[in-house]
Image (tube, rainbow, N blue to C red; front, side):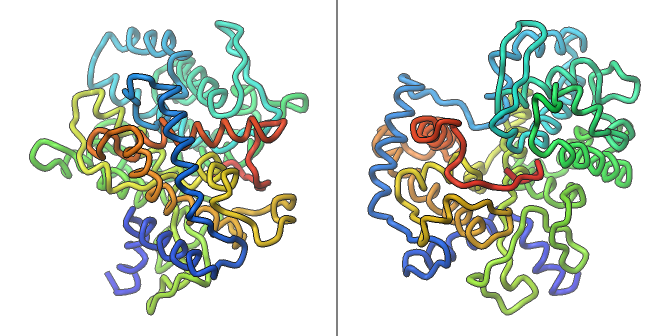
Length: 409
């Protein structure tokens, strides 16, 4: 590996996310950002709100981790029970099915738009946003829509590689009267996932034909002292799923995924100006960790992962005034994910989540071991951001208007 390739590979780590976000945060403390003023003195008020939300949602302070399973449960409980029953309670088969399901559900969870609705055909319940996307993906998986044979509880590479916008739209009940933001991008993402897995059978198909859960066979080599490091899970996802992300930066042949440019990031190597976030990959890592732990596999080092640079966490800090626009018109304009304003906002979100976590713990009387960042998010910052959005905007949307292709937010 050349020095440039090693530098590029280093961007596929949680350390790169945290370190480079902290650099833009430091620039914000000097009032040197292009789009935002940083008001750290308002962070305590934000922590007060988050702690109050935690106590309101979880009076016993027994907060689950912030993973995709929170959107699948409890409404998907009966469907998940049927999945387990169909697999005859085979623990190994159930783990692989759950890994396939959660991978697809996370990758399909990137902002639904304000008008989309999903009706659960079993219960008649109406779901929106992340919860709706979760229930739709669960129903498709349970029907076998992602399996080669059209009925098994799998996500097969060949079936995903042929996924059309029309087929996905049917599963998500999307149409002219029920538009789903980024539908075309989601279908394309699944096709690239299928193609990537088919092209890497040594990674995804060591035991069975290529499927997302094949990743577990390589991860077992990372187990040390009976535990799997959380960092190893994320890095495996970043390295092996890099090709699925559309139109992103490639450096020395390394697919960088959710990685963007900002002039405030300065390096003397090929990574100059680059800042990664890996939002969906970290969301998937957190979700796979819960899946593995539920199956009896111990995961350690959860603190290595970072907070998620997405619009609920970021919206919390904007709505609480911790971040202020230099130009108020910024809040009315539409932005692409690579715009400097969005890159700065996401970087500040990652750094501010690290800053607010100990404040929230202090207010709850908990330490990091009992209340790690993944529980602060769930308790927590994500829900506080959603609550503020509902209070301040009629549609409950984020404070910034972002053009989504269904693969970032």
